[in-house]
Image (cartoon, rainbow over all chains, first blue to last red; front, side):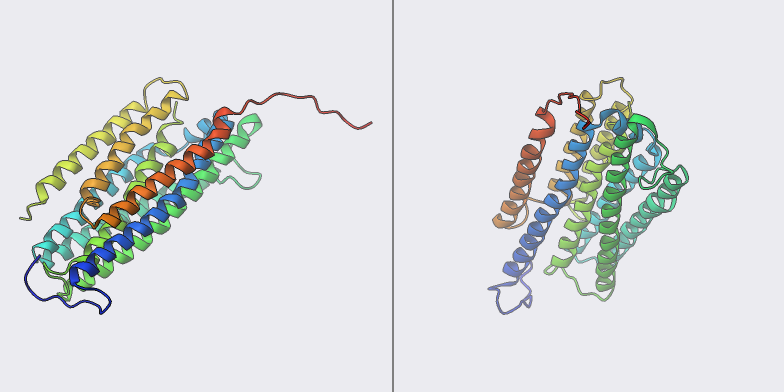
Amino acid sequence: MSDAYVPHEFQYSSADHQAGTAVAGMWLFLATEVLFFGGLFLCWIYARTQNLAGFDAAASETELWIGTLNTGILLTSSLVYSTGVAFARVGDNRRLVQCCLGAIGLGLAFLVLKFGLEWSDDFAKHLWPVGPDFKFTGPIAGGARLFYVFYFIGTGLHGVHMVVGVFLVAMIAWRARRGEFSPAYTTPVEVVGMYWSFVDVVWIILYPLIYLIGRS
Amino acid sequence: MPPRLPRLLIAWAILLVLLGIEFGASFLPLAPWPRVLILLPALAMAAIVGVVFMEVGRGPVVARGFAVAGLFWLLVLLGLGSMDPLTRTDYHTTVAHPE
């Protein structure tokens, strides 16, 4: 920490105290998010256990190459944003802005692949689980519907988190461009980075549940 | 160059290797339930992102407490919630039709 004076709100004893509280607050929020997505993962366990044949048959219809490419894109976006955090700590706001723009670009690429390409393809293949046009029929149809309910809710909720993350990273880029951050003050940059990487973690778990485990 | 950059690059390379491992493992002719083991590389990836990118060890002690509490309650949620589907036995019965 630099010796330079960093202003802080009156309720904190120091800037370090304020920064630590912000980081702890983000971890507390992320703990609630873990339980939020945990319910979704529990649904996957329950539905696959009770409807194995239909669930796995439906999983085989997913676009493996898009899911795998998107996983690589998100892992890289976490690297790029974390690099920006590292540059912020040494006071390089210009590099931080570049890293934010890179992370935003990768995030948007993910969203285009997921919702512009993959979801469109899913609708074209009649994989929307509600209604009489669903692709699967017969005894496995129920399990297949459950898989696609999980798929659309899981990827939809994750996509909403991605959109929020893109806005947050854009806000950091805007503030960095205004020169608001210094080696003594990087808390918003770090807290947004935690959120951005958490969204990555959720996808890391969703990826095998959706694309890999049922593909036998 | 920031001193943390090499560590980030190494973590990213390991993450891509683990992604390749789970992708390749998905083509193995495994039975439906052993296929759940494909989750293991994903769990390792999540841990690496948490430790290296999210820097779970960097914040104050209470922050680490929140992170551990989140994982603990997730295990409770998944553990207790899985008890029924993993241990249930379905017995087929004949439905009596009213005359």
